[in-house]
Length: 153
Ligand SMILES: [Zn+2]
Image (cartoon, rainbow, N blue to C red; front, side):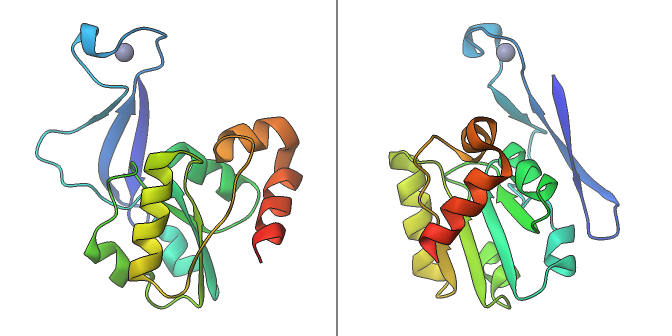
């Protein structure tokens, strides 16, 4: 499995999540597509960006989409799934004047975006048309993500 380390803002390891990379039915193999250390409560991924960002920050649905946004130079954090936005996350992002929300373009993603926008006035959902952040990046590179953000702003 792909190991996804969660690091604190000084680079200290907090936890690790795992993503199975096999093309099979994960449940039939006794695990999920994503796997968490038992009893570990859901954390925000990429919290070093909270300390490094300026007035704006990006929020993605899933760690790998956050990695894409960091790769193109934006500071971003991720929640590890559409159901993983909690009140304590609001407090972590409350100091930003703008929080761009990159939820997946599906029903679960729409619910996540609505939930984040209800709890943070600074939140603004970015409309993705070509799938999620990773799909858009693979289809159109960094420009596709810049275009999606511009179209929202
Ligand atoms: Zn699997």
